[in-house]
Image (cartoon, rainbow, N blue to C red; front, side, top):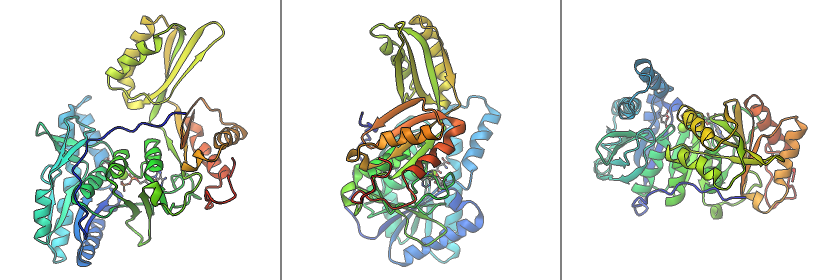
Length: 434
Ligand code: ADP
Ligand code: ASP
Ligand code: MG
C-alpha cells in the first residue's frame, strides 16, 4: 500500500481567527436563475443582520461555465489558455454583480469584486492556477464599511498580471483560501445537496448524509471523483485548519463538517464511495522485460505534464510485460503521439487506449484498523459479476477500475455490501463485510 501524496501547496499567511467573519460559497445551481440570486441575497443580508462580517463567494449561474467553454470551441478548435481564462472567468462576475444589485434592493450595502480585485494572486498556469497569495486589503476595507462583499469564485490574477482560473469547481478553493486569509471560523459551502453523502445521491438514492468526515477522507473522495468539493479546496482547508461546513442552499438543515480526524466525535469504518469516468486506460503491449523501461516510458509523459494515476505491470511467462496505466481522458490527444513514439523506441508490441473505463473508490479511515475491507470489495464485485481491471490502494482507500457501463452498479453493490445506508461506527461490532 502507498500513502496518497497530495500536492504541496504554498503557505498562505493565515490570519488570526477573527470572530464574526463568515465565508459563504454558493454553487452554480444555487444561483441558477434571477429568483435564486435574490434568495441568496436575502440569506446574505440575514447573515449580516446576525452580526457577521459576510464574504460571499459565488459560482457562475447554472451551467454557464460549460456554455462558455463550448462557445470558445465553436470559435476555435484549440483556444489559447490565456484567452479561455479571460472568457470563462466572466460567469462568476455576472453572479456577483447581480447579487450585489439584489442586496441593494433589500436595503443593505454590498460590493462585488473580481478575483483580481479581491486580491487572489495565483501562479501563471492557465486553467488550473494555484493560489499563491491572498491580498485581502480591499475586502477588509469593504467589511469595515459594513458592506457585504461578493467575490467572484474560480479566478485570480497571476503574478504576470493575467486573469487565471483555478480549475473546474474552483469556487470552493476561492472560498476556503479566503476563509484562511480572513481568519474566518468556518467556510460554509452551500450546494444542491444537503452535505457529503456516503455516495453520490444521484447514483445511490439510499446514500446517507455524513455528519462529519476527516480532511484525509475528503481528500481521497475528492481526488477519486466526488465533485461535491474541489480537491484543492480540501487541501487548503487541511493545511490551514479551516473547518468546512457543506450544506444545502435550499433547506435549513445541518450539513456535513469536514474537519481534523481528531476533532471527530465518531468515526465510521467506511465513509463513502466515489466514482470517476474522467480517466482512460492506456496499455503498452509486450514490452521487453529489461531494466529501465518503465523510466523511459513515464519520464516523457511526466515532462508533457500528463498526470498518471494507477499503474500495473504484468510479466508474462514469455518474459514480456504489458504496462497499463490510467490518465485523464482530456490528456489523450497529448499522450497518444508520445505513446506511439515510446512503443517504437522500447521495441514494444504496440499500444492501446481505452476510454470505456471508470474508477470506483471506497474510502474510510477505519480501514487502517479493520482488515478484510479489500477482500470484501473484491468478493462483492465478483458476486455481481463485475470484473476488476486495475486495483490501487492507500491506507484509507481502495480503488478499482471497472468497465464504465458497470460503474453505477459497482457503486451500488459496494454501498449495499458495506451497509453504508446504516450508521456503522468504528466502535461498533460491525466490521461490515470485513
Ligand atoms: P456546486 O455547483 O454547488 O459546486 P457541484 O455540482 O460541484 O455543486 O457538487 C454537488 C454535486 O456533487 C451533487 O449534486 C452531487 O450529485 C455530487 N456528488 C458526488 N459525490 C457526492 C457525495 N459523496 N456527496 C454529495 N454529493 C456528491
Ligand atoms: N463555474 C466554475 C465551474 O463550473 C467554478 C465553480 O463552479 O466552482 O467549474
Ligand atoms: Mg462545485
